[in-house]
Length: 109
Image 1: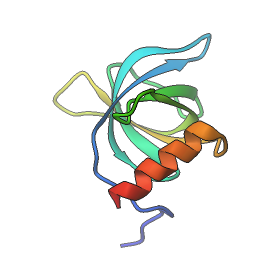
Image 2: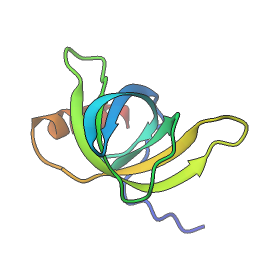
Image 3: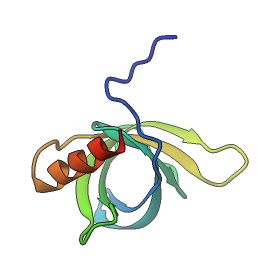
Image 4: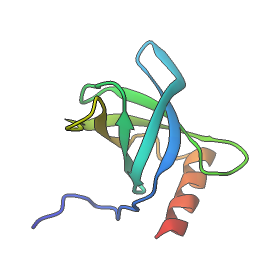
């Protein structure tokens, strides 16, 4: 089977919070189900639209959370629950927070 992913996924769960649209402050709860150097799979309580921008504050079990900016690339309703699985692609791949994320990601491989 053909795999469209360019980057290897790490099946790790992380706590995160997010903000969207007119309220970009990352205050809504999310759970990251897996990561790659280019994106994440999130579990959220609300639906999103493909193309939505999202600001994520991610708890890497370090002193401070990191903040990354991403866009929604797919959405699936999590059958049997009121939650949604959301695939996001990191759109800002530079800066101190992204470098800290990459260092964390590479340790998970």
